[in-house]
Amino acid sequence: GRSNRNINNQYQRSAQNAARVPRTDAVPQGMPKVVRRTRASLKAEAKRTNLRAVKALSVSAVLLGFVAIVIFSTVKLDEISRDIAATQSKIDVIKSENTRLDMEINSIVSLNKVEDYAENVLGMVKQESYQIEYVSLACADKVLISGGKNVSDGNNDNKTKKFWNISF
Image (cartoon, rainbow, N blue to C red; front, side):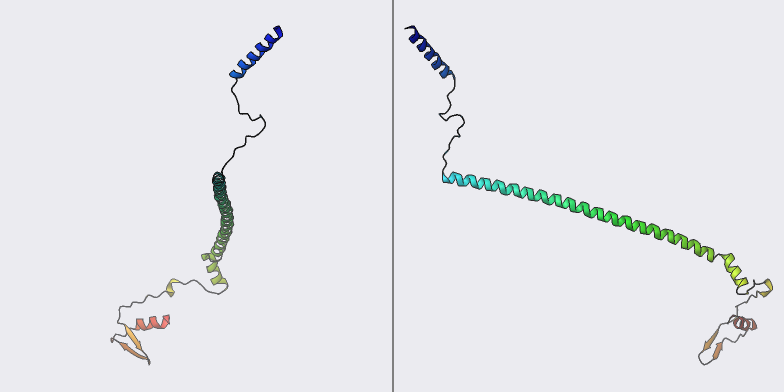
């Protein structure tokens, strides 16, 4: 008797405990649940999966394009910067050479050097005040026509003749 009663009590307690624990499906714990699907639902899911893959590849391609553009732009910018630096260096060299040549020209063509060359090499002398002669051109003009004929207004001034003889 008593052992039957203990077994019954234990059975009732385990039944009460089982009622308190929520029931799960009859699938053993470690086994995957098998879901049956129709062909249409499988095709729709495959289409969605393919669409997601295409979207992911498209976004990846666009991002890769942007990265390529940034890299290309950086390389071009670096190239142009190097060209500018090289050109600026050439400009600086040319400016310094120009300054040197200007100084050389100024030293060669200075008025003192020209006077010294004219006096010592060419044998020239400075003019004196008695060598200066002023000419008045208040007389009439004269025109020379081909064939050696002169046309004038009648005023033949000796000073004008003297000026033309000295000048030419």
